[in-house]
View 1 (tube, helix red, strand yellow):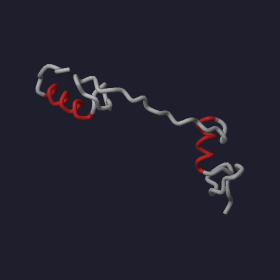
View 2 (view 1 turned 90 degrees about the vertical axis):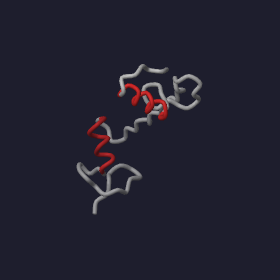
View 3 (view 1 turned 180 degrees about the horizontal axis):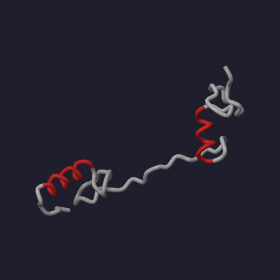
Length: 80
């Protein structure tokens, strides 16, 4: 079985003498040796009054996002 032509890669060939990972890099970026840095999320505090948890969606933590969603479903006012 043939292996990837990239140095120090011993994975099996998928296409164009490259393994699956290097083939995807070639198709996406035009170069099989391109390595894109991983993105990291910035932690934001929940915008609810006196809440110290981290926001997950729309500036609210999981607990307050759920409460806000249920209140809006019942056509009540946003309590933030």
